[in-house]
Image 1 (tube, rainbow, N blue to C red):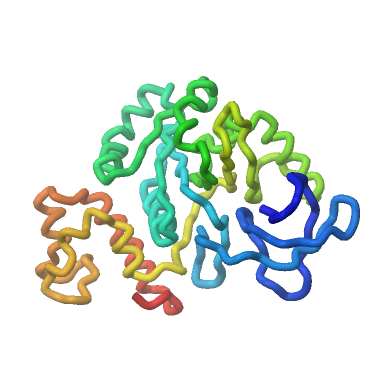
Image 2: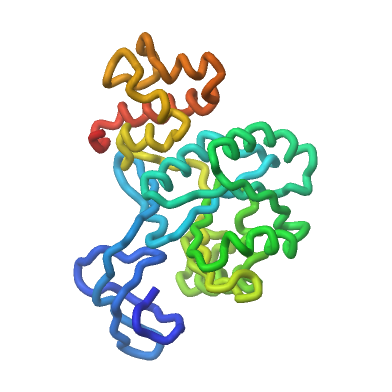
Length: 289
């Protein structure tokens, strides 16, 4: 997002050893030739969405207003990946919604409805769309939610995210392929993050940030405190465990596990949370709570 410039595309590089810009950054730049520029500075970010492992961190986007997480029943979505994506958006204090694609596949949609109901009960918005078979209805369903916002789209591979992007941005595939050729990647699938302005008739004053599909989504940059605060249903029970440093995995007299056993919390989400905590505790470079 260049500041103080006409709306045009430039090939830009950073000057010197500076923080690399990412999609969504607002930058100040200087043109140096036809279609070329040098980035002079990057304005302070109001948020960052990233994923990480113990060795490296990948910044996906900055300065976004909301996150749309794509999922579907065919192939079945990974709820662990969903929890990871929700955790990183919560840590960045960016609201998230679920976009349940392939709603025209009745049997597959019915198979995931019970799990989607859990997230609706937690207060998440869930949009049911069929981006491939009914793009116009998909646009109608998402228009108000997208309008006036910069939305980061993330999701597991195979959920139909590219199909959704093409439904929202008619020339997205062509524009993405043009960039692939310019970068000499020779790839037709999305392998990099890209921001698109949506046509006004799709959603006014709206942008989407498309990302590659994920099979893994590390959270090494999050602390155990950030993970637990990404579980809003835990809040009424926090502070009631026997031990102040309870991890809610196997300690005696754990209020969180007792609530799950009583049916007050979703047992599946608690199980997945335990996996994330185990992973966090195994990471020696993890952030402190």
